[in-house]
Length: 226
Image 1 (tube, rainbow, N blue to C red):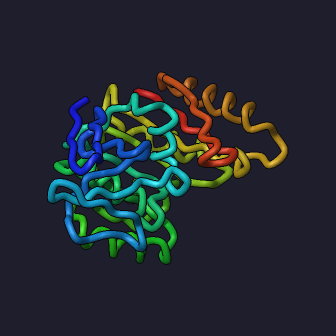
Image 2: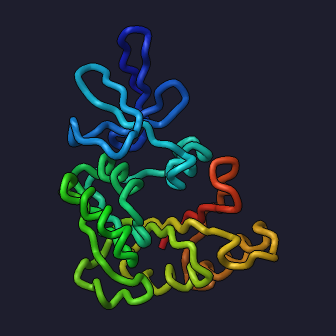
């Protein structure tokens, strides 16, 4: 990995565009310099801004740290993000897919309002006010390279399956599973096995299931390919 040095500080490149290790934490190169979210931590090195990606606030950051970044996300990818919330994680993905697009589906009008504010600053984020249970409402987006979902509902697996048609052949899917939303009484490990079985039954190649503790309690990331 290429290292960039300055004042005893080191940025280490990862295999993912605009994503770096710095002092044991993940940072993205800010593609819209001077524009930040909330009170996020920023470092300035070599005339550039880098944004701290907190794994306790973003499940995708937690996954990348737990797996030591074995996932590749292309700079020009099109991504469908179901349950984009207020756009925080989407903004970091925006730094990564600098030449791509992120279609962000969000049902809550309150969260969508915040998402709109993020999208106004980041032109590769396309906000969509819709229910992910009704993919026909956004069929116009066409095929995507990656299907990413973070929806804490009992039917979260079914929602993902309903949206599988958007994923191109050999595309990557990441489903963030919140075990307690599916069944509060069942052991999370058993729930993850059931989720893997359900997705495999749909013809998806489940590569791995990653427990996201200690960053996200009772959550796992299911990584798969079509």
